[in-house]
Length: 162
Length: 291
Image (spheres, helix red, strand yellow):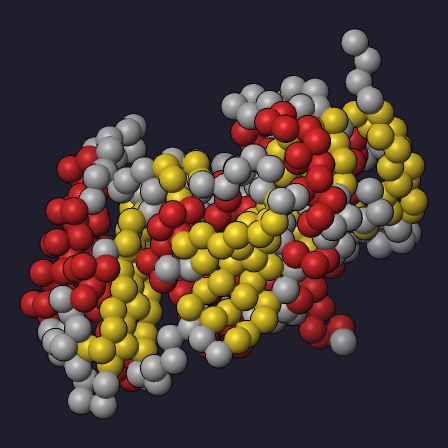
């Protein structure tokens, strides 16, 4: 039995990406398996762990809780879209590196998306606001403290650069 | 891919959504934010033949005010309600409850109507709807009707909405009293998880600090969220002294029907019901006193 394929076009990291997808293909599966954007990770696949977080029209969402067909006509930013145009790391990514905000790296793309979305709307967040913003992202390595420090460092650097 | 195969269609209007539901019958299901439905489909607890997507219907996304009611479109995102300062001043329980709902990523996608239509008995928004007496406006191809929350919530994950109906709007009562206060609290394993027990309270006071109106409710301790109007009315006329609040919390805990599961026994849930109702009532009183 062949499944119906739905034609979609999604703006992914600034580029228009066409696709033909079965309705039940999740957004994260499409990004990873079809577009080969494997920076976004798959963890629990039912909305608990946050590893698959991407920005949909600028707001962080879980890419495992959306079907790719639902993203048709929308704008998606993945972790690959956070780096500078020349491919070098963003301020936030550098900060994660420097404060040891990651160890195994599995949660990192989700953490980066969640904290970049926070900094986009609030460049000077309190510790409580940072912890709330990453509250939907599980990390089993860091104990979260260095992730909070990374976001604080990135916020400070971004403010100083302005 | 984890869900069973299904066909997908985007509805451009509520009318079209109703028409699609009528055409595809029991096999069709509406998808709003999908934050509960998609996991259920991934686990194949839900296997709709057709998904009717109502996310792109802008007419379902609004917040409007009338004299004593806040009207919220069913498709309004939880994050939009959370950020609405005017709404927070008129129906403060909504923002207070949403702080406990999932996480930023799920509230960005989850909708007000979706949470109510999913009718999880431990969920926060159904509890607020039940204890405030919100009205649900349902539309189908054959017309519109309104249901009180008490009629709408029929059991665990079950509502009185027919398969061909779309929840269109929710009307939340605004308490006009100047001296009013409300509070929402819960206990869960981790913040953002399902509540083991959730409690909400709202009280209004006159100039002498006497209670003129009260409402309280509990989630996670029955097949639907529970409201306790008979217990609340006993607070009216009191000064909301600690003893009166304690009596109300004990009465509510005695009246609920908690079950046991892996995370909490019925006995523990009843204990939480008493403690959390007391906390919510005291916090609501403090806010009303200082309002």
